[in-house]
Length: 404
Image (cartoon, rainbow, N blue to C red):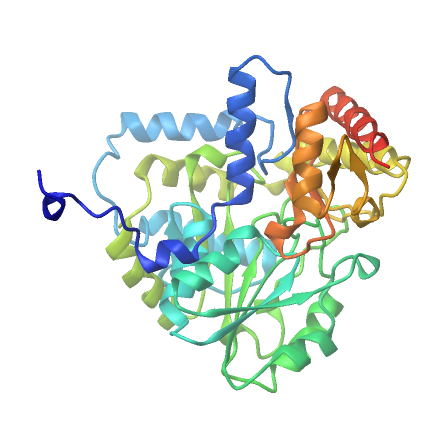
């Protein structure tokens, strides 16, 4: 065969711009090590270690028996969208109609739909850092420009109005933030969102994506939504789903509420990628969003106990700077005091090096803060059994003690 008949192994220009998800990469490495017999404790994935509640599973079984096995509408079943609209009103005081709801294959797709539908080539998207790993990559897919604004741990990683104002340019199209936040657990109070909204009202062409997927894992009190603030409803896309609050990660079901023209745009994008989300997952999600949120309180209480345990344990590790996250199930300690230290001829240059060192030395899988826009930190997920968390922190402490 001549060289001209050989397929050129060339990836697209888009693919070369993208990075592998750091959380999924670390989960993959953890699985590989476990398969080889190593005793790995993985605190890398953001996944509740609870099972889906029985009443939700029963709703899915009924949907199968009732033959919901055909293509649903692209934006989801009418009755499920109506149930989500009622949930938004009940829990968030947001008035959406069913035609303003788009149900997708996970909140990640909801975010991707919105960015692809609304951000054009060269437009800027402000990302308060630390931010969820996929925000920047989704913006790149759309041809947009991620604008990272680093927030410090001593403010609980919260974006200030002054920082927001300074980041806005004539090219700014969008702001994406999450509350409760992945990876920091930060929760924005209503008055803090109001201060940001006061800045945004001066720039009517900026759209906000408010990622509220961790809404039900909030230890600070009442959840606040940007769309509920004066002047923000018509320019905010509210993202949510059932993965985190109802332990339904594998069901792959997220949704958004938005002004109708934005919802229609997202439906158009989705129609060319996946069409409708899974019919059975939709019926399961309907049972979840119709339920009293109190059904999730036991899980939230367990996460709160774990948070308190891990924060207390980490504060005893020399050199770590640890704040107290107000939601989600992550802790994001500053580990920069270990940069420049070495063991066995290898020097730790950054958070990625430290993550790899801890994994190699003590088989605890964490995620580097660099993936979330903050190179000084690591993300620790405490969605694991309390005994595992205790052992993991002991191992981390043991690994760090080797560095000098």
